[in-house]
Length: 259
Image: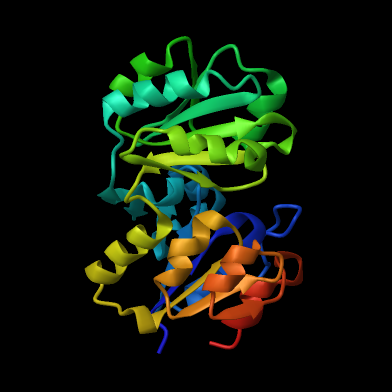
């Protein structure tokens, strides 16, 4: 019996035009016995806005597992040490096409000199985004759980190997063709799923998950009924127990409609 369903957003639940399946929200409301989890690299406040009409029927894993919210309250958090934030900022500044977003529990922060094109990409994922002259000062006044790095020209994978040089307590994950996310080593969607499973006494065998990219890897590994999208990264397909249709073919809902 399935007691938990977790799905990534971009490339998984959403199609290539960022549209949600028309019957997803109705499915959530009609399956109140199942804990439905939205697991994303996005900010909580962005996810909340996307699901405002059913937000209290969902659990949100935000910032790739750095934060978990239920009914507007944080039920799990893993903060990056302030010293490591300073080291990361200095490290990332050496890449001319890289742009940082410091992601906290209260807001996200971006340098106020950022170009309009980059801001357009950032605001797609960050509902609460402040533009500041000093990122480190902003970080001191919030609980920072992630540093998102946007690369111009879709070059994230090109520079990914270099990000192994981040502080040893942290981990860099390729979360899209333009994004690398940095968080504490023990932060990922899988750890967040485990926290939810423990909270509600749900087993791995009773859990289902859907994903398409490398930041979904641990989440799929934490759920016995794991589905990679047809459009998923090859390594994600390797860890998943099943393959479903692509995000443009309603792959998530093709499975959920059978429950």
